[in-house]
Length: 123
Image 1: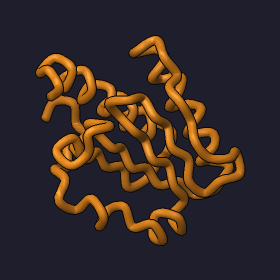
Image 2 (image 1 turned 60 degrees about the vertical axis):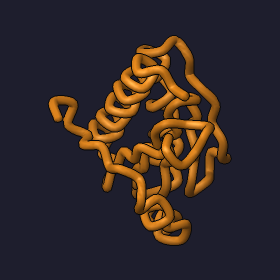
Image 3 (image 1 turned 30 degrees about the vertical axis):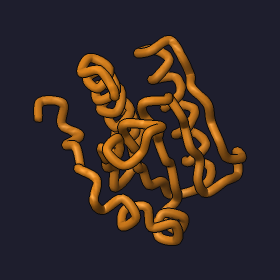
């Protein structure tokens, strides 16, 4: 079971990465608390982009933001030309998808039972 301080750090990272995505014009940004359903992570951040190129650029910026906060750039899955890239920071996994990929994989419905966390840090 995650310690409370670890969950606070994971939440802060998820919020920071969601903010970075917003600054970079990501759309339909959602933070989902999936720790109750998965043993491998605490939060998913879902981000929609307009193109494969924006997906790649978003992944690179997300990695840099995570490195500033945690000292680690994490791991990235997906080719530079992919419509879906995954950035894995252990306690937070960021899914960056074009609208077509997001519609196809339908992660919003797949994780509909997960609590959505407000991207507003004051919430």
